[in-house]
Image (tube, rainbow over all chains, first blue to last red; front, top):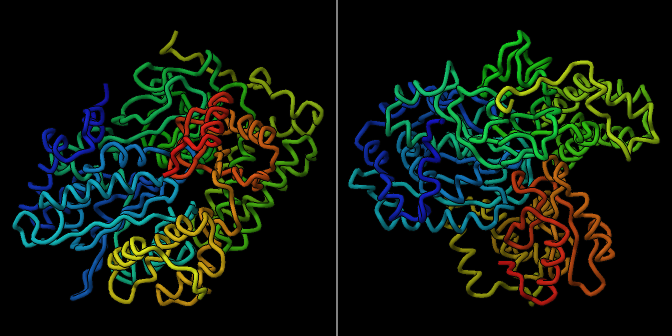
Length: 452
Length: 169
């Protein structure tokens, strides 16, 4: 059983409301933090080893320490709640069921960073959640946890919720800031980084919802204790949103010591593959991270079990391994067509490209067109090589990582499932009626030991 | 600015409350929330006079409103039906059968993607990931998500819409 730090009280009736949240010990960490100095809080966050939970995995304490502190210039904390990556829905769960956990985390973080006005930038489509957050903010303000002179400490803090307009690119921190300033969500060139020139050119820290929520248990149990949970540099707990062809989709909190096999097949988590089918592949960290076939997903290149943590998932780099990313865990069974799946992802990235950089604007659409041709049985062998060539020309050649996010799924699909692409080209008449089955794979799919 | 376009006093008060969230002179930051409010109040879409009105309210140029309104997918640039069916079709939703749901709606309502039924009741908009991947397939109607869809469930939802019984807000 994994240790639960964030979702410990998620199923307590009424936990959305301050009264219940307080009864469960809520705002105890904030009361403790407000008696500490901002530097002491920063040291706790550094000691915890917390890595940004939005996908990049950059150490949060280090990110906070980069924040410029020019005299007389306001600083801001902006929570990135623009969760839009296919497969990822964990932040939605946190905000919907535990809004006070986020607000308490923001209060502590704002105090540490010296932000008197902090913002939650939430994806526009989550249109019922701002009401939940605003209700919780009002409750917190009425109880003295927000507003002027919080708990008599002299610290003032307001939190506001801003709805986006439906653009995946606004999950990129500088595009988010542009959007928060009332502009198109076009990413900015870096440097300067937001820590120096962020919102309205003021020093700004942008952190994911889960990262900020994790500040509460870090202060509660201390950074050193938090760091003891997990393994290596994958400290603490991580929320995984599991979906696709599994028996129990949902949001799970794991301590990053379990194996991928256990996560997929045990009843505590995904409960195995739907309808008793075989596992074909998985995208373990949100749609932008490389897809991996079952055999490489369950075992490392050395034949050892693969674990649900940053290091183990990335073992072998993109050639064989994948990434923890945002923890959006998409499972595909034996009946799923990798070409079709890759085509829908290419369509997504084409649709969501802001259009600022030519490789991304033109390349994503071009990849989608070629994939559509191949999926519909109108592709040629050279199209596969052309796809490979296009994704190579997008990766690393754009202002923001959306270009990489669009290129990696295509690269990984061709790398691991080239035979499936070739089958589509060779069997145009079968493309839309049959799938390239598991029997065609040279590598046998391991029988999971958990269920056997 | 068209003289006939104006927020209700309640909405106008809301606009001023939103502007107050930002530092003085940074009222442009209120643009997205105000556009959401305008779309809701002025018929579900943003025509040019509405965008000009928003520009005037925020003391910014109309082009600044146009370029933002056309960038974000949640803002409709042409009239839509009373019920906008936004069906997610990306990744996990595709894996879970979103195309079947979309085909069913296309056939049943006799409309293509982006079109509105002749009676002005429904508009169909395929969407690219709405963050309900664990509860797929799904669609958004107004403020709410309808998840774990089946053909039967879609039919029930459409019937509720026709009867005016489905909450949008």
